[in-house]
Image 1 (cartoon, rainbow, N blue to C red):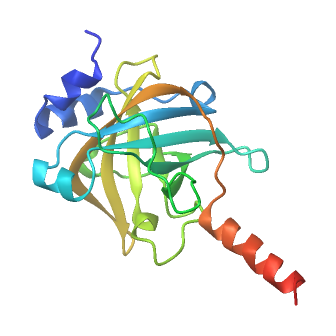
Image 2: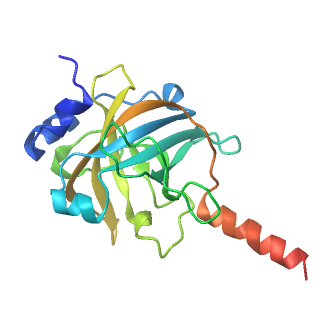
Image 3: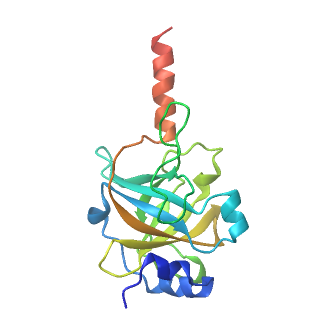
Length: 200
């Protein structure tokens, strides 16, 4: 049976865990230069109001490293299907956070005996050290094997060398082509530092 986003949003955590275990490997080439609507599947409504229900995740093939990397985009909270517009900062730019690199997960001992093929590595993606997002090491699978239209992720943190799972699952539904490439925070800071030095 082919699952849809609405199916995942109705599932409890135990069912989402089963989908995660049965999920397929990612096709990184098919995901390059795309963006996905993200939707939290398991946090209580109060947490969704305090944090967010929807977000965007992106995937971009880095021309220098050849790695598939991406970042999160804060979205206006207008419902799962209505979350089409990013929140903007004072300069009119989309608010982004939590950069990651897609990595092979086969040599990692994951919680709950999970055996995903890939995960999102936030710890080596240019996030600032003080950013809590840098702790992320989140498994990501294709919900319907062979199709990259719907993905499922599980929030896992790397703390003191250990993988600590959180009771939080989220789904990604393909939206279309990537509309903007954002540099990682550390790279942006380096550019700003060089620019400031050149003006002295």
